Length: 207
Image 1 (spheres, helix red, strand yellow):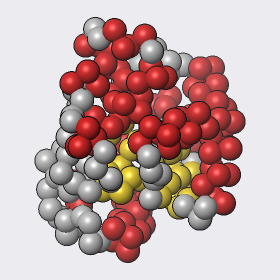
Image 2 (cartoon, helix red, strand yellow):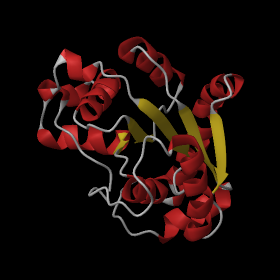
Image 3 (tube, rainbow, N blue to C red):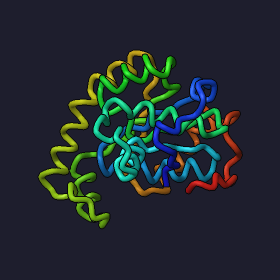
Image 4 (cartoon, helix red, strand yellow):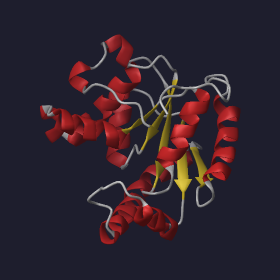
């Protein structure tokens, strides 16, 4: 489960908020397996992960007035969440969602991500997974799901083009069993972030 944080009104001090993190953006269409795989990385490598969507939903539920300016406060929510963890490496699930998110992050946070993890999954596989899950979300009907998938593709295209030009995109195919996906992902993580994370098997306390 993604780590949660207080609304930005209770954000950390400027010193904590400005601490540079090794940030991994995790992107993929709805049903591509982002949350499941982030949970496993968090558990085995003691790396916290934050879901932009969960942070925003938590803000709305809190009744904070910032809930009416979601686009403006998303990056602030993520900054507050990152400032609250001692880990120097974090996963951010579902961000950026579009080019505007990326440019706001860059200007507000002052540094870019270390890597973009793209979970690539065929549309029909994502549709099948979302039809089969029972989370009670009002947007889990077929028509809306297809729109979400198409919106993801169109809005992420310029973001992925930008990061591919920088050599920052790592693609993992997720239309496979969870264990197979994680075997590849954990191997990639050890190669890239072994010095920053705990050894495999160390509990993160957040999964």
